Length: 221
Ligand code: ADP
Ligand code: 5GP
Image 1 (cartoon, helix red, strand yellow):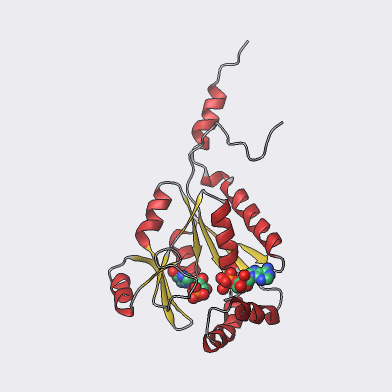
Image 2: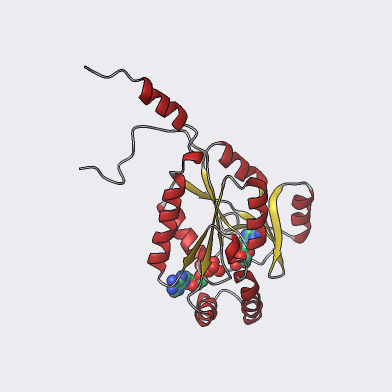
């Protein structure tokens, strides 16, 4: 029997992909991203730097590198960030080095960033970017998820809700749209997207050698 998960003995060199996931706050992109990172060992998280205050459940250096505004500005001004944006009144940015090393080594990286960051990566590295926008089923559910998460103050939740409509308006700029009504279904959709994008011909330069090898193989008589 051929198993779908059986590792292939044939290795074909390929480029890494930059998986960008965005959504209005509370739609569930970090939950989906977290599940994906647990299940898919070929994917690593781009750990952003931010000036936002750490949430109780977050670990410095794992979820974000929490920095002062002064340190953020130093990183930004020394070109150490691949992209950066102000979101909900705080600065966020993607460290350049980790992402460039991952791409050079053909490793896949996940970026949990907003639409402004997605636009910047799309402009700079469009061939490598695969972008997904996660939508909530209703605005009422978005609001209850922000409350149920119970990690932000009422004031912070209000700011995020107020910004959610203008964030959703950017949905057309993404390659894929995933509706996060049922978490398992949304997660399965994201897994399917990653699987298919990894098989794209233009992401697998090793196919040239592989196919040449196939065509020069002497038939066994
Ligand atoms: P985001 O990263 O988009 O701001 P989170 O991933 O933190 O959102 O999710 C916000 C809250 O909603 C969390 O408490 C999470 O457990 C919950 N959540 C995520 N997806 C679903 C879903 N499909 N149904 C119900 N709750 C969900
Ligand atoms: P949160 O404060 O909820 O962790 O994130 C707030 C928003 O900032 C989310 O939309 C998240 O995707 C975005 N974000 C997180 N890191 C980055 C980053 O490095 N760059 C950009 N542009 N947005 C980010």
